[in-house]
Amino acid sequence: MASETSQTLDRGLQVLKILAETPGGLTVTELAGKLAVNRTVVYRLVSTLEQHALVRRDSRGRVHVGLGVLHLASAVQPVLRDSAVPVLRRLAEQVGCTAHLTVADGDEALALAVVEPSWTDFHVAYRVGARHPLTQGAAGKAILAGRDPRSAAYIVTAGELQSGARGLAAPIHGVDGLEASVGVVTLGEFDVAVVGPAVSAAAAEVASRLS
Image (cartoon, rainbow, N blue to C red):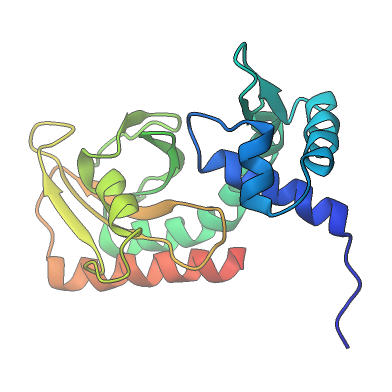
């Protein structure tokens, strides 16, 4: 027997999802067309979401995702960190490289959690909160690769963010609404055949913890 759901809430969530996928925003009429419902229904949904700052209307009347969504998203970050840190710690100790969880934030990759190995003579100091374009570095490129199910299991880069540094990262799959990767970075050499599967396994474990 199917569980009971709220049609109004479901439509409101659909509005947010559609707007999140439309950077230029949409008019109420365009939203009504995408939802296949009456304009009056969409107008009420938008007005309610607007009162909670979850959507905003620009000077042309186009509706966009509002800043209130950022406050909700910020509350998710500690959950992601708490789930990922134990996995990153084991990975860092296993391969002797700095391990990190990186998430997509617009067109940038944002380091959300970092764990350094305890037993190496030297390692890369990677700062939580560090940002770089998704198109640079293993972490960002792995996130982009995760958008294509036919992509490689992991991405390897050298010297793209720091001279002499090598990185390897794998996308996190199967977590709705999350574009992220688990990766490692080092100034030394590593055996891709060993480190690659270890990083991919860590990414899969993080996904399992979040599912």
